[in-house]
Length: 308
Image 1 (spheres, rainbow, N blue to C red):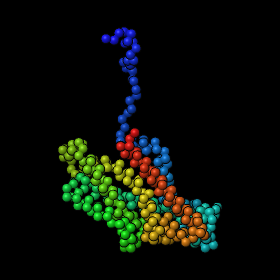
Image 2 (cartoon, helix red, strand yellow):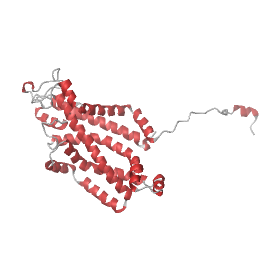
Image 3 (cartoon, rainbow, N blue to C red):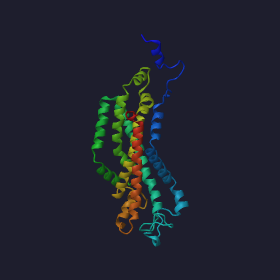
Image 4 (tube, rainbow, N blue to C red):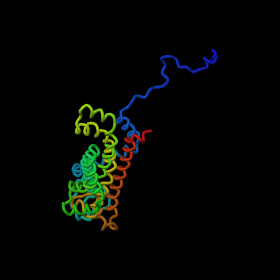
């Protein structure tokens, strides 16, 4: 039995007084967005990617207002100009403005990257969802086909398709996506297998929902975080692949500028003008680094297992 003096010492909160502020419940998307916003380095990297994309979209305006030349404009009197007021990043062996070509090259390099990601996600998501949802022989057939695609050496496939099709931004994106969708299909299939046995899926099926409704309205939103992470991490890798194909002569052909073929053209003039190698190389490095940092930030924000 506790005496009156002992009762007085107990810290009992008075009625109607809150002992702590209850944190309001947040949805998965709001909570993930808050975690992403808290990552300042990741947000800065994402902002840099957006700025590069806007510059690429506004390339004609930059040529008209800033540099006053087109990327194919040749001036043999201004060859190998060093960076200065007349040409902010100098000129190449044909007197073409390097800054203008970098900006127009961003339209190709970033365009191929974003288009490849869109194609890979579309095909991979469809195959992965169908395989994971139906299972059985459909899953076996589709996954063996995915294994076959992933087993083909990518460089040989790139060479073959570059010979068969004249490379431009669309065909090059299709060539790279013809290999990249397999890994997306595997990711999506794994998520679908883990989600389709949950109670809300079984309850939705019990009230008569069809397969298409279950996949589009219920499975796809649960797979979407995986797709966002795959897309954000894939952009940087595809930029490197596109630059490598251009460097090997299997990608975008001159005079259309891209960051990869700018490096190809500059390799013969490295000792004459190192800027021709440095500027496209640095641009590729910064873009890929920003893409990887942003991709890691998105992964950390959307992965529930990393929730602090």
